[in-house]
Image (cartoon, rainbow, N blue to C red):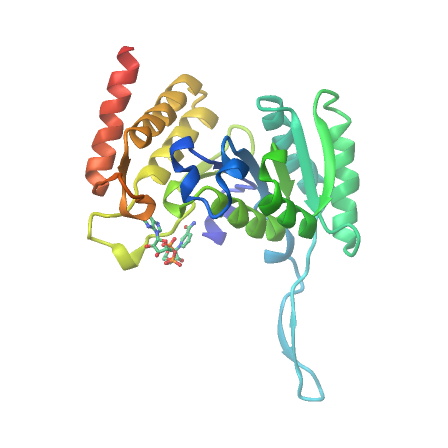
Length: 273
Ligand SMILES: NC(=O)c1ccc[n+]([C@@H]2O[C@H](COP(=O)([O-])OP(=O)(O)OC[C@H]3O[C@@H](n4cnc5c(N)ncnc54)[C@H](O)[C@@H]3O)[C@@H](O)[C@H]2O)c1
């Protein structure tokens, strides 16, 4: 995956954390903290400490071993991810929170300064900065304060997983990895191949279906069709259908294919309305 992202130059990872109203009870936080939650985390995906050089494990003359990774960002890498975040915020609630560790890392200080410069080009977007540790705390204390969070590869990895759990289940979470304008993009559920439940017909297909909705919105510019899919998912959940991972008392447990077919039928119904 790292190689695919790097070679396709998929530098912007978009991970929405949306809490469907019918699933507020599935979150580990109190319903009032997550009801209506709609955050977009924009994570830089091809730079930072996962790729920086020097890296490696070496043996020192005294026999000790030393592991090294390097956090490195250039202004152009910061600018292009910042533009993605500000452009997205312009289509949402108009707020960007940039997150780093400017208090202890030079690369974080550069990140803060350069995001501020890009922010000056977007007078209608409100920018604030938050240290990554504080951002993690705020995500579980009062997540609805955020609109778009933009952050580097390492902190984005952590913060997007924290935000993901606010919404209940891995099986609900789509993601997008975008490259340069006109280049490639990759859409996939946040979860992996779930080998422990393979072949049982119980996997939740919603993250994959919502990933296709993201493709319609961000690559094909088909916002209405994307909305139709998202509304159909909402409709089916409101109707009480659940796969095993999001099962709640009093709801109907269904298989992967029944969930998928029900979403298709809801799309037909909503499309006619
Ligand atoms: N982005 C990615 O491509 C990605 C992400 C995570 C893991 N992986 C890969 O997937 C494989 C399995 O990894 P893992 O088990 O650590 O992570 P996983 O995401 O596949 O599974 C984690 C847990 O969540 C459950 N789960 C995942 N998706 C689900 C769904 N749609 N419905 C219901 N339950 C679901 C699984 O049953 C499992 O208990 C590994 O090869 C790993 O490298 C890939």
